[in-house]
Length: 178
Picture 1: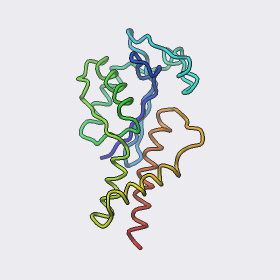
Picture 2 (picture 1 turned 135 degrees about the vertical axis):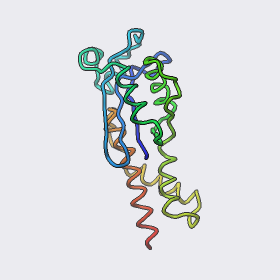
Picture 3 (picture 1 turned 60 degrees about the vertical axis):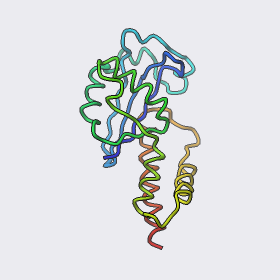
Picture 4 (picture 1 turned 180 degrees about the vertical axis):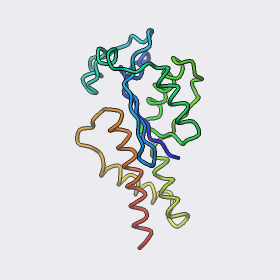
């Protein structure tokens, strides 16, 4: 099953770590967590906090420990196709979370959401459309769904990717029935 995942982070520095995670299955089930920083996670950017609105104090008070989150992620998400809009960044934070909880850093792997969008278009059209034509549909959907002011929170961002996947599927099904 497809799963769309997103993280928010302490900063964009090399020492950054995840502060929030969310995922959405293709059937609509979702899960989100604020992440209590591990003891050695000290990096913090007030600029990042201003963007996502999550304070370090909130994480200390309401965040869930990395081991609980990582264990649930490995148990729940293993064997599924995981996608993120920015897999290099989200993969970095996923790896930090997994390692902090004692899991192998590649216990879960992310791919770029766009790959799932092209795959769903290919599933509908088969060989009747070129990859370039499918990419045009995908890029159209992405453009049409780009929020004026992105929420920069994990669950809304994961839901946006899920919504894009559903729209590409719907758009390609509509065009296929012409």
